[in-house]
Structure formats: C-alpha cells, structure tokens
Image 1: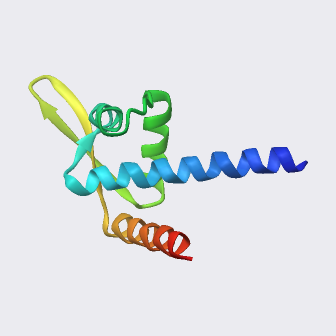
Image 2: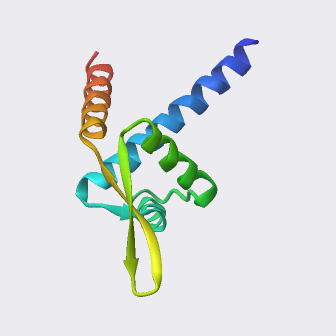
Length: 105
C-alpha cells in the first residue's frame, strides 16, 4: 500500500468513526429512528447521509453493543428506534477525552 492509499484509508476510517460518534451523540438526547437521525444530521451540520450509510452504521453500532434497537409502532407504521447503551456512553466519553487531549497538546 503506497502512502496515498494509506492516507485515504486512514481518512475514511476516521470519518466513519466520527460519524459513529455523531450518531451516538444524537442518541444521548433521546431515542430516534434512522430517518430522524439523517434529518437531524442534515439540519445541525448541513451534512447529508442517506439510508445506504445510516442503516449499516446503526447495524454496526448495535453489533458492537453501543446502541440497541426496538421496534415501535405508530399506527400501522413500524419503526426501529435506537437508543444508546451504557457502553455507547462510555465510548463517546472516551472519544471526547481523546479529541480534547489532541486539541490541548
């Protein structure tokens, strides 16, 4: 792997982890479903992420134990509502401390 590919891979992994943390941060406020997360990210950060990114990321966060999902029914509509777990809160705090340490040094 040449330096250019390594840097691109590193940037991609950082962006993915940053988005993971952003999703967890939004879930700290209250449980949300995927479409609501996409809308809130667009509203707060003018950043559009679609279902092709959001739902695989949520599935990955759930597999890692950082979020849990539960089916909620609104009339006839069924939605998967996500909430942050204790482990999710811990990783978010660790990420915050890491960023603070990097900015302080």
